[in-house]
Amino acid sequence: MVGAAMERAKGLFDLAGAELRLIAISVFAMLFLVVLAATALLVAWGLVVASLLQAAASTAIPWSVAAIVLALGHLILAIYCWQRMQSLGEHFTMPELRRALRSGNR
Image 1 (tube, helix red, strand yellow):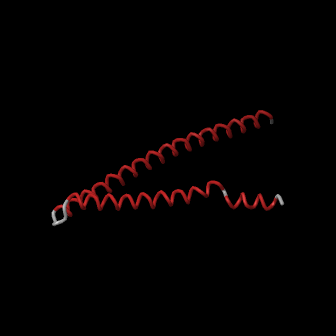
Image 2: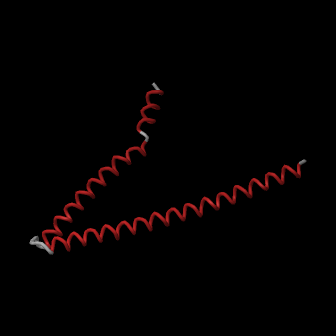
Image 3: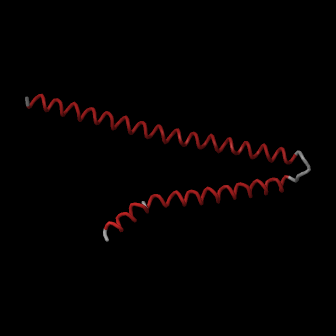
């Protein structure tokens, strides 16, 4: 009976180890795919910007003006993303939980 319990425990530990290895491989694969997707997105974005610059250069708009306008658009987008990121980061401090804990202490 003790031997059977030991065999079962060993089997469970082996299964847990195999699942942890699978989780580690999956996390690595997910990180790799995120980096790959981000790279592809940056290349696509660069091609769009280059195409817009080429289209603007073929019109009466000077190339430098088109580049400045696109750069300002990117700056506005970056500022917006930064502000959103900061507001989402406030959730990490768990403000509602802190408030509930403080009111519970009173």
